[in-house]
Image (cartoon, rainbow, N blue to C red; front, side, top):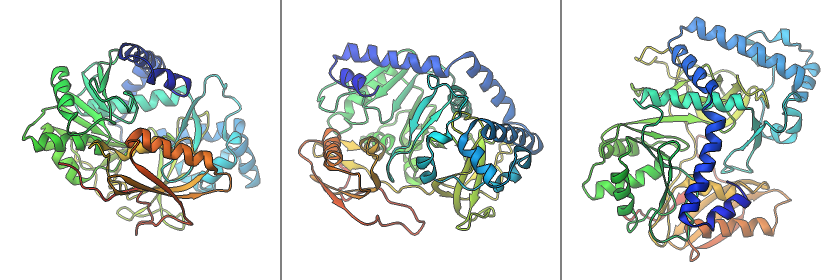
Length: 465
């Protein structure tokens, strides 16, 4: 729901908002829950038990196919391979991928159009972008097949968690499903098509949280899915009241899941947390199984390399940067795409019997929760939506100095202007409150951690409970 649709949604009465939301859900359903989805999920339920040799053979075949497609239909790769005197026959398997250079975000921005397949119809392309938390959002496209595979892998993990399609879910993500200025219930909308209760992440304060708990009690979900920090807010509130809320599973993604947060969630919700890691670029998908020994690299989805500062392979246990290759997105193939995330391959295998390699914890942004003046707790992932339209921000950092003051450090390019600043300030006021003072400071660089990462949100305000 973008632009005009968002404007209409925000100004509609609750019944019409529910209707619009279900219309949006129907659109997603037609795209993602097709007959091909059922076929893909069935294949994935079988391939999870493949041997090393079977998975290697599958990856090699997919690499050959996507390289041939890139040579034939993608101008950027056709030119690149000719410059290097490479033909598709020179890249026969995964071990030959090193012959191609690493694809950086800057290259994607510079050659965006040339990376889109000439065979793709503009009417079938699905547009995506990164969150923009560490710079300008990166724009890209997927084909419908990629969306189906992505959805099937998501549901394979849900099966690992003991869930099935149609089970009642509660969802706490970053969509603004309830206008921020709303100050009375309901702070949720119902997605009837998928039997999901979509809860607002923008209205969680001590006054409103009892209404959340009451609605959840009425709805009786068997699972809760959302950002770790947002679900943590709910868990801490329940803990402060000495209450439990039994579920079959909690599913988290999009943020680092801290061990202390996992421990509290599992205690309050009396179930295991299933975390998963993926990127909007659709190049990697890593999921936890019911043994919870790490994130399984789903080898049917992509090729994952962990490389050092010289772009050489890291041995298991050694931290390096993730470089990933999509095996499915023919609309805009990302081959050896350099992510901003750091991790290591685990030395040990999982006791579940699947031969998928395990990842250590992903070293991403160490984020805090913003506390609004009215007591609402705002997840960092919610704040990312403010930055998505800002294409001239190179880097950013959000610091909450106190309950009424937020400082935004920006590294910008020469095209950044006053209108961008106005949008930024307005975006914070819409989400955190009009009484918050937002100060934008332009800096030469953002301070990095020892792991080379940017701590994006820093809050100096203690949580209210």
